Image 1 (cartoon, rainbow, N blue to C red):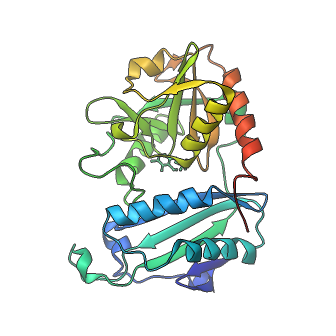
Image 2 (cartoon, rainbow, N blue to C red):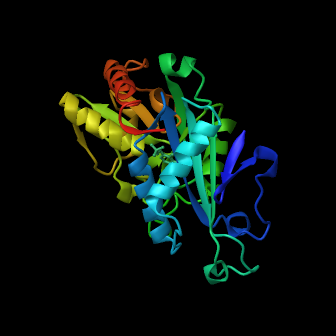
Length: 288
Ligand code: PMP
């Protein structure tokens, strides 16, 4: 496999960065997870816009224009012979001194990995996920804006560990006020009767690209979706639920904290939305 590293394609074994990179020392950097479907990079422009905004928010000046990163992404897919896959774009702060200050770092590193994707096991798309609420809270938006897709995922990793220890693959994370924010790597949608709801980004949710695509699909299908603060009670008593994410796509949830959601089987509308999502990908993006 070839990895893009600062303008050159290198073998996987040679794709190395310095131990003084603040990305390693402090998790100081940003990233994007993007999907390639049938030779089309899904919503590439939106991903790059989010990357640019993340960079701006953490005072990281990207020395590459959007078209350069887009071309590097496409080239990484082409050189690895991929038609379908998962692309990881990483920008680290670069090499600096052993202090926290970002001012000692002047050379951000751009890394692009394009590989095959491992989704949740297929059975979970047909049977639905059983998940829990993690006791690990989402970082307060006043401490770190949830829109910034930073390299520091420690609290999500700990919440994922909570899920795994409970025999689950995902966990809901609440914010410090006790409202539902998102899952460790996925956004949340629930339905009550004929209305859909998803937590607002102000509650601590990442503005997911898949979340955005699903909101577009819902509008097209004529479903209403609101973004109020949601409690665990709202989740437990929902008629239908699914999660969205670049890797997960749209995956049904049938049980939360031991409470069945709706009839305890994947909802019909979830299936309809997933079908519409599959229709959209492969068309909505940039061909490599
Ligand atoms: N929330 C978090 C914390 C994430 O890391 C991700 C991405 N895996 C998502 C939500 C979903 O966002 P997207 O649809 O852009 O992948």
